[in-house]
Image 1 (cartoon, rainbow, N blue to C red):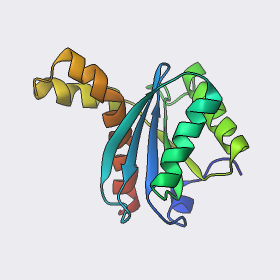
Image 2 (cartoon, one colour; image 1 turned 90 degrees about the vertical axis):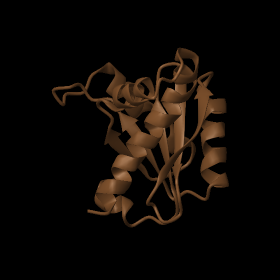
Image 3 (tube, rainbow, N blue to C red; image 1 turned 135 degrees about the vertical axis):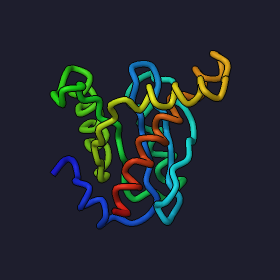
Image 4 (cartoon, helix red, strand yellow; image 1 turned 90 degrees about the horizontal axis):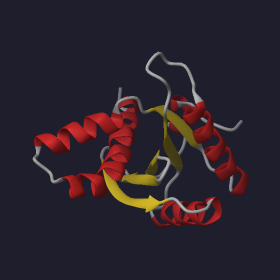
Length: 150
């Protein structure tokens, strides 16, 4: 099995690592050990797969994570487009390097919601650009954490 379901995510232990994979960057977020709160961690500028994966796995290990939650960019109508396939391929490549549980999570509107919040907070354009990816990862991860408690 390549990807896990929300139900199987409940079977894992440890914090979760959230990833918002963009075309130029990865936003990363982490949960606390009780899986109640997601916090933005960092943004990684994409270079090549192997060093990018190394940074992701280093953070995964450093935080003692039990699984990854990856933002899955489905279209507004729920269909899968080229970006969704690209994210699936990225995740399969991660699993090819190291078998880790990965949950793909619908990320529709996550970046828009975070950007709207930053605009409402009157955050400068430069600060928004710097923060939006890791905040989107936290937004995605928090959605999963909230669903786990239902």
